[in-house]
Length: 87
Image (cartoon, rainbow, N blue to C red; front, top):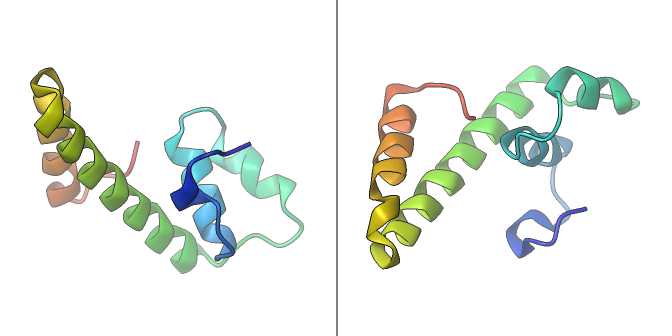
């Protein structure tokens, strides 16, 4: 169950799976297998990258208020710029 507003909307299935994947609490392959019709791979990849952008922006905003979070925010930004997969 999600309680973050940005994750509670009627959008593509790929977004649900990207949110689940980025939470670190589930196995992507198991989640895909649980859906009757998985999203197209290009949709899932787009949603995973978009979710990574959300996380990167969020981490950098948090770091403005909590400077001790700056290393994590910098790492997220570097990973996004390098095109590394979302965590």
